[in-house]
Image (cartoon, rainbow, N blue to C red; front, side, top):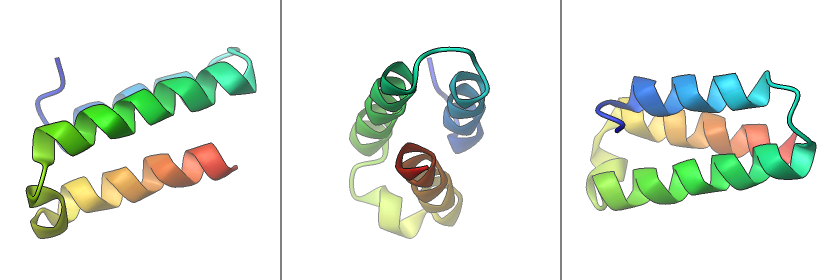
Length: 63
């Protein structure tokens, strides 16, 4: 489904720019983060691009 960190980011952007209620956007972004964590596991700290995307999606939830 998601091959690269850019795929995760694109999905998060689409949801964030959608007309979904805020709770639904947060739920989807959290699911993305969980999926990303499982896909990258320990590599998250080593892969700079994945780390940046992860934190960008996390900041979308906070806003």
